[in-house]
Length: 440
Image 1 (spheres, rainbow, N blue to C red):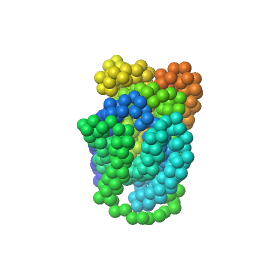
Image 2: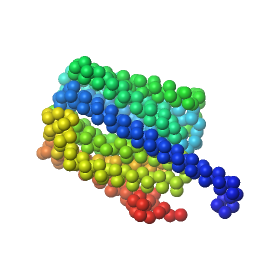
Image 3: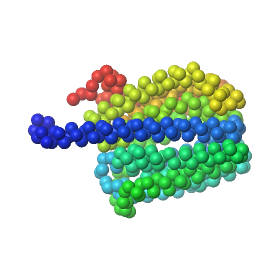
Image 4: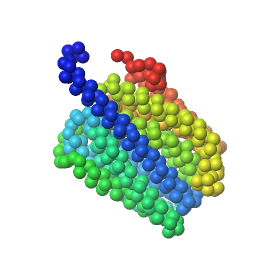
C-alpha cells in the first residue's frame, strides 16, 4: 500500500506509533546506559576489591579458575541469547513457545558443559595448586546457573521491556560486589570466599530473573518443534561470531594461564580491565540496537544502527584519548603500586578497545537485520591474526605481546566488518558516519 492511498486517520496512527516507538527506544537507551554505568562501577569495584584482597598472585588464580568454566559455557551457548531476543521481537512464535524451546536447549547445554568440563578443566589447570583446581570444579558445577540466568532477561529484552531486562542483569554483579565489600570490611582475603560470593550471585540472578519474568508473563510449557529448530537455526549462525569474538578477547588470557605465572596474568587482567572501562556506552547501544532493530522495519533499523555507531565512535575516541594520558597514574592509584607494570599494556590496548566497542554495535545491528552469521567472517579473520600474533609475540614480549596481538586483531575485525556492511547490507561507512542517507 502506498503512502498516498492511506487515509488521514491511518497516517496519523502510523505517525503516532512511530513517535511512541522512538520515545520508547530513547528511554530504553537511557535505562540501558545507566545500567551499563552501574555494571561498570560494580565491575570496577569488584576488580579493585579482588586485587586488594588477593594480590597479583591470587588475582591471577581467580581468573584462571573462573575463565575455563566460563569459556565452556560460552562455547555451548549456541547463540541462544540473541536468538531469544530476535524471535521474541519478531513475534514469530508466542512467548511460551520461545521460553519452552530455549529452556530445553539450555538444559541440554548445561549437561554438555558439565561433561566436557570435568575432562578439560583439571588438565588445563594442572599447573595450579590442588585447592585452585578444586575451586574450579565447584565453579564448573554451578555453571548451569550462569548459562540459564540470562534467558529470562533476553525474553524481556525482546519485548523492549529494557528496564526489567537491565534489573535482571544487575543482580549477579551487585551480589558479588556486596560480598567483596563484606570481605574487605571483615579483612578476610580468602580466594574461597571470593568464589563463593560470585556463585551466590549467579544463583540469585537465576531466581530473580524468573521471578521478574513470571510477574509480567504467564508462561506455559508449549513444545513447538518449529520454534526449537528456528532458535537453533538462528542461534548457531550468531554463535560463530560470539565464540570467535570471545576467543579473540580471551585467548590471550587463556594462553597466559599456560605460559606465564599468575603475577603476570594478574597485571595483564588489570590492564584489560582499565582499557575496556569505557565500553559501557557502546555495549548499551548494542543492546538497544538489537532489541529495537528486531522490532522495526529494515529502513528504520538502519537508522538506529547508524545513530548508535556515531554516538559510540564519539564517546570512545574522546574517552580513550583521555584514558591514554592518565591510565598509568590511575592504575597505581586505584589498584596499588604492585600493579604499576600494567600501565604500558593498557595504553597498547586502548586503540583495540575503540574497535571492539564499535564492532559490538555493528554485530548487533547485523543480527537485528536477520544476518546473524555476518559478524563471523570478521571475527574469524581476527581470530587467525590473534593466534598468529600471540605465537610470534607472546614468547618474546610476554603480556605486552598479548596486548599488541589483541589490538591488531580488534582493529582488523572492525575494518573487515565495515567492508562487509557495505558489500552485504549496502550500508556504507559514510552512511554510518551520517555523511549520506540510506537509499530510498
